[in-house]
Image (cartoon, rainbow, N blue to C red; front, side):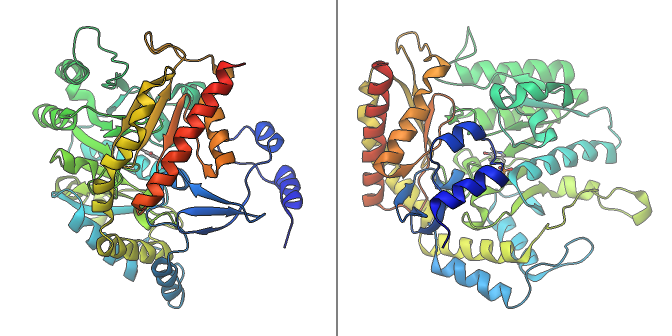
Length: 451
Ligand SMILES: *Cc1c(COP(=O)(O)O)cnc(C)c1O
């Protein structure tokens, strides 16, 4: 067995980690995970930590889940991978059927990929080409939301707007119309409630530009933008506007899907069916990289025709429809049903809210936002003015560091402490994890105040 010191040295020599300042990482004794067990991760020295962000918002049941492990082994006895380009495979077909049955009704066809970003790229290309195929190629622009996040590939970044991640790549991007997201804590609309302000802004834009707009893309709860739920009725309002002006609605549920918000889909809270839906993250229970883009028959039919009409969707990846991933996803869905995972989130969400209620009194806690098991706690220097801490205080990062010392792994977003427990977490586990969370926030803020 290789020691921690050896691994760290090899990490230093050979491995470049994602979204990571390597100097910072290597200087601070990073956790190196050896294995997982239930809702915990165990490092190479045998120390156990709660997986407080579900391994970046993916994990559903926990780690080393016997049923998922077994499903992958069973598939492995058949085949690991064959291409989906121009041929089929068993679990990909069965999974497409299964997902189409449970997504908002009206979404009828499913296109596989390997990551959320790819699912979004495909959604954008689908929407763009749809209008070409129906003879309205002037409709070729996109509307996106301020502070939106849809992944890190260039198309996804083009409709994204997280300043720190995206601004530097601006010269590479296609431009899209941007509407301020209806953030209820920091309302960008001077003269209106956030929802009304945003819907009005979208309407104004559509009124002038709908004949050149292909689609609007939105997250029901902004994830990387700081865990910001859209106000109630916003998705419905967007659906109505998109219908009225013949603009496609793309809803990105890569983060919110598979029960994260207490319903299978965030769209279900509003009874909305988008024209295109992107899903990923929890799809395989947090095991393997599978994502998907779903579309209505109206869209699919516009691509359907004779070979030499050249209407096909020219997109695919080497591992699209990977059998191991699809088999795992099928078992994940079975297990979600059997263990009533979505109900678990719904039933334990009030407990989670109650456990965090006392934080609201803290002079440096500006806002506590929650949608099911998706929590963001925004730390501010001054509650009254909502003034942020200076960036170099790294306040949320400090809190996460304290949490690590107390036995839970978290990853912040700017000044927002993110808490996203695995969806199968029990009442006792939520209790323990939130104890650590609150203690870490206390300690982290005390440290910042004293320096
Ligand atoms: C994480 C995320 C993505 C990107 O998914 P990857 O699998 O990391 O490429 C896209 N959209 C949303 C809303 C996300 O949260």
